[in-house]
Image 1 (cartoon, helix red, strand yellow):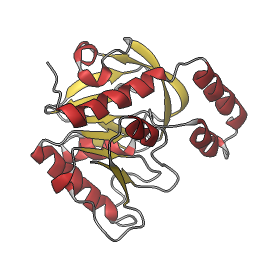
Image 2: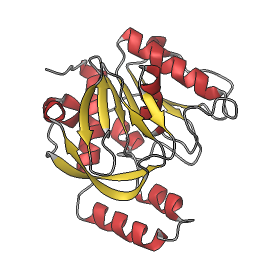
Image 3: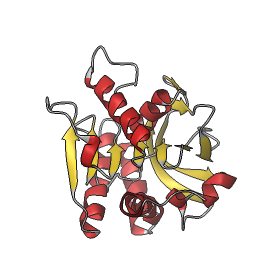
Length: 229
């Protein structure tokens, strides 16, 4: 079973759910922001931690973040594949000994990211081109720990993806976002129309295939235990 941790009701799992259903894989969504019960990692094969409007250091306002950090740390120790998306990636960086800069290298909308040499060989990015377009929506940014393997970057934000150990990944961008989510996030911004039109074209032109491939690659890790070369 894949456990999906939702930190913010406005940042749902998006296309990840139908991709899991497509593979016939069971999953559970733990809404950490509102549920008193806690996710159990003893029986899961993968962990996905989604994004959120808060920062990693906001434990006073959002005390559940301490639980999420513990869940990620426990999953790493057990060798469970982990995918941290945006805030989730920042939480992973912090848990593993890296850092998070507030209001640093923020991005909105569609941007290109470029794989590093290690990224081009990593199974999370198998089948993806060296440069591909992703949807970004973040204010803060992570600095991976010293023992991390950098996997992707961009001119706007140097650290876009990293790996800890064999299969714990942090990414800054949002491969899970679908058109409805993009429109919701853009609604209160001055450039909402441009962002919505760009995302619609992104989907229509098939540029989102890279995001779908990335998520499918991670799902494959949760079922086959694939590790980097």
